[in-house]
Length: 434
Image (cartoon, rainbow, N blue to C red):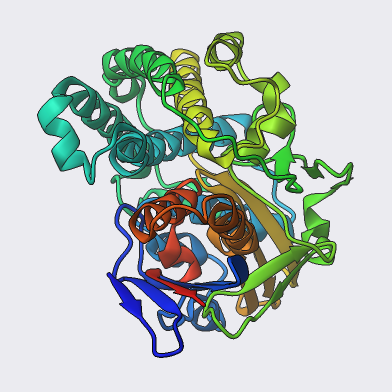
């Protein structure tokens, strides 16, 4: 909806942005045909998770933080358990770590499938929603539902349920899945792997605008493509450092137009997510997924956020491959957890949520009571990059009418698959021209 103001300016208002998780607002001001102000207004009240974690036992964060998000609960569980185990000086077994990676594969599969096909693809195919898309492309939507179900079933088998898993604890799991339980998932995972590889070719055919940004990418890196953990943090500006040093490099701060904290990396904006992971870890993808990416027209780096849908599809195929690899190597008889006794200290835990680097910092006392908590989700870290993309989109396509400009700005936001509940909530679009 467009409104003319008394001073001759113009306001474009979108009451709710479709196909993102959450609610909020955006404000763009033009002066003399140029973009003067861009604000991503996240106005939903804070959720206070960090506040009510204080005073709780060190064993409670995996269950509490999983409730932050129904789409990416494993990311919160992984970062919180890693932090607590670091504080307590505990090292889990390779089998526990493999099972954590398998659970994370389930989350990547269900989350990426949801975003690629149901939230993002309609932008490129000219549909307002996946419901309209289903009328013309039922096979594609049915494939998307199969893919998401495969991820949900994997999370249920390992985590106890698909939403807010209940089988995760500090030190490991309450129980390990059996060989038979995992083997039952194999046919759906094999089909999912094939579907995901086919989907890479499908999305590669979309029409992508010429739109690149020189972001500082930040991601985890270790001995394999990062999901549940990494050995260090790396960046495209050449920085690399231990996970324990994240608070030295990332500073959170408040801006007046957002209830979600913004963040700076060594004093400047930065980007976390699939594009960062891919660019900084391309060599650790499997040969099959590397070939799929190159066949889709990508190089070993990607700086066009609109092409994030291709990268997510490559990661989707990789998650299926990893799940099959872990299941095929699984045997009975592994202890589900290791004992963890509290000791006073501070620890950082980090993992790669579907939307990017997530990290938790906790301080506990000698009795294992949490005295301080800090949770830094990917969408919060990406706010400055989203605003930079909105500014560039508004400047690049300022000759479009209000309807098309609104659509382009919405697309620029959906490139990030923002999980606004994690950061807080989202979107009301206002464009003021004068």
